[in-house]
Image (cartoon, rainbow, N blue to C red; front, side):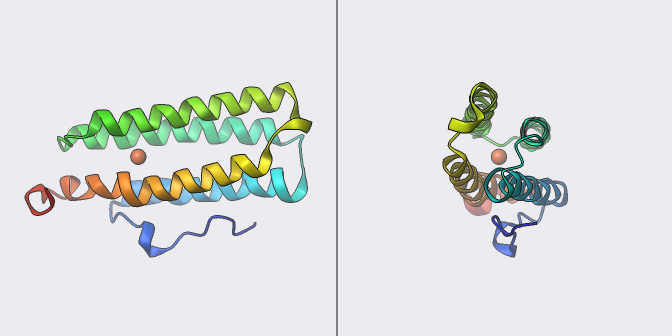
Length: 139
Ligand SMILES: [Fe+2]
């Protein structure tokens, strides 16, 4: 397994369910990176793309339910970011299946890495005080 996307404490929200999901996502991105960039194992890729898309959808659903539960005021903006990523992933899956040889693998991996890390550090960290019921401290 490559260490393309390395988990560290800076990504920890302290919300157990979310951190578990994020760690799984990091792992899945590493698996995709191995297949797409390192091994060129194209026969596995449609399956890996699908698995990642499914997991991302499930994770976003869990996260949005949590934000709703704690009355997070920026839920709509946050959900919109999720929808954008889901859209991009769907587009990539289509692009890949249309012409795997022309697929911009490095660009996709860079995009996923940057999106995930900055999303966790900025957007996800922002709802943590609300989950913990400390919204008065941070707003
Ligand atoms: Fe999120």
